[in-house]
Amino acid sequence: MAKKAVKTITKKKNYPAKKGKGKFSEVQGKYCVRDISLAKEGKMLIDWAESRMPVLMYLRQLYSKTKPFKGYKIAGCLHVTKETAVLIKTFEAAGAEVSWSGCNPLSTNDAVAAALAADGISIYAWHGNYPDFYWCIERTIDIPPHLTLDDGCDLINTIHEKHSELAKNFVIGGTEETTTGIHRLRARADAKKLYYPVYAVNDMETKWDFDNVYGTGQSTLDGIMRATSVLLAGKNLVVAGHGHCGSGVAKRAKGMGANTICTEVKATAALKAILEGHEIMKMDEAAKVGDVFVTATGVKDIIRKNHFLAMKDGAVVCNTGHYDAEINIPELEAVSKSKRTIRPNCEEYTLKNGKKIYLLAEGRLVNLAAAEGHPSEVMDMSFANQFMSHLKLVEAHKKGQKLPLEVMDLPVEQDEFIATAKLKMLGKKMDKLSKEQLAYINDYNAGT
Ligand code: ADE
Image (tube, rainbow, N blue to C red; front, side, top):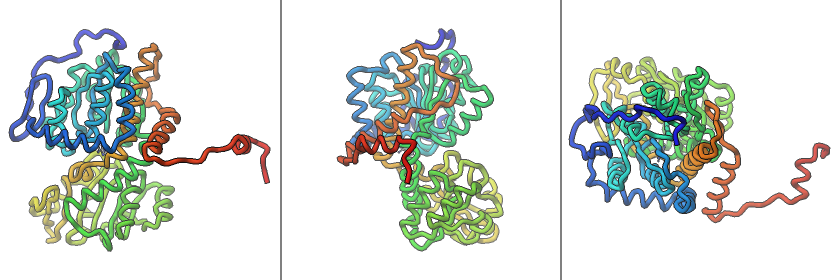
């Protein structure tokens, strides 16, 4: 099954987990979640998501008969949400053995994690698993996995850095869900330090043109509103980064009546922002006028000490990029004299200059920490991509095909399949090119 036999892959030792504060529900070697009694609540959330993810459910129905993943083990490190549960259950129905951890300390829905544990999934995840974030990832590797599924590259990094034997000799391939993770992986591949092939799920049209744009757009505003209840209409809303995610946030904020200001480092992206009707400024200027700030860049230190000092009293600051490095929180702490939690996911910092700044979700993904992440309808396409990409890895493995040790693009046919299925499920019909029209577009001699 694996690339080569490996002698010592599983570490059967019980790792001394600190597990943060409070009580846990745990079965050694099987799961560690916050409270298994939340399973019933979690199951209802999963039922709800299933009713809104028709493409993934279609794939489940199709492959639960043939079980192409039989004998394959998948370790995943991705936000434990109701949508992720639908993906996990689809892999299981298609024959896989699955182990899972969250990819962000604040994004796990404890009820969903409990439902998955009660259903027999090896899951190591709870909301706020700070000291044990990597302990949870390590437990998912114990199975050990033939395939890995990442959102932000933490699982792949752990396997490559701490279990390189496993990476080189056992794992057959992986997938990556997010832009930040793809950047990390390309750097790893360039350095010739990538030991198994990885599909760039993020880069699929049916993923990033929908999930990153409309998913991030809606769920980020949802997170801001749940954490603050502020009126967005009439506010100056600053979005750092006008890539797929940032453009989605700016687009939706504008639709709600905010005066949108974007900051950029890339000229073409800045121009696009202007033509979308947003203002473009340097952060040094935007800091003085913004009411709400959202970072969506994938880059660290976007909002720093001088920006906090320049901000208006009452400014709200949050992040929707993968890591919590975009807002420099140590510098915010350094210019503050006190802080208190004024509402869930909303920390009030009183600066030494007397002004107050509100930091949401500790600078972590506000859409997942303060809201529920992207809606099921968009995750349907993202996760159909995940499922189909793993299927490709398994099919190649069964045929004995050797894939390159690269970050690989997926075929456009996969996009076509998923988009066509989604349209069909939505009951929408499209036009079709006639033979004559097809011949016309392929005719190099056609002109005026
Ligand atoms: N990333 C963003 N939204 C998500 C969701 N609802 N589930 C899993 N991953 C996500």
